[in-house]
Each structure stands twice: as C-alpha cells, then as structure tokens.
Length: 70
Image (cartoon, rainbow, N blue to C red; front, side, top):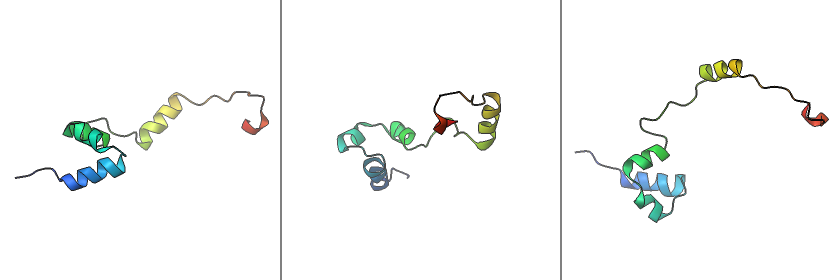
C-alpha cells in the first residue's frame, strides 16, 4: 500500500511554497503536485527550444536615449 508522505508534503507546502496551514489543507493533491512542479504539465523550456525561439524572435535594439542601455 502506498500513501502520501504527509511530513514531506507539509514541509514542501508550508516551508517551500510559503502556504498557510489553511491554504495547504484546502488544496487537492493534484493542485499541490502542480504547485510543486510535478505532474503532467508541460516540460520546462529546454536550451534547444530557447535557442529556436531566440532565433525566431530576436530582441530588437531600441534607441532609448539613455547611453547606459545602448
């Protein structure tokens, strides 16, 4: 039988995420997983995808009139 490791989850929610106890206990396990970055969400942006986006949408240098910013 597997269950939740409540001490670890509470530490992650209360200390890691800064939740108040009432906020922690009002979450569903799926919501807590999502907030902790686990579960079936989209994968984080990898270097290859970042490079592809940078090439497709390059930063434009604008004249701000302020020499500190080029």
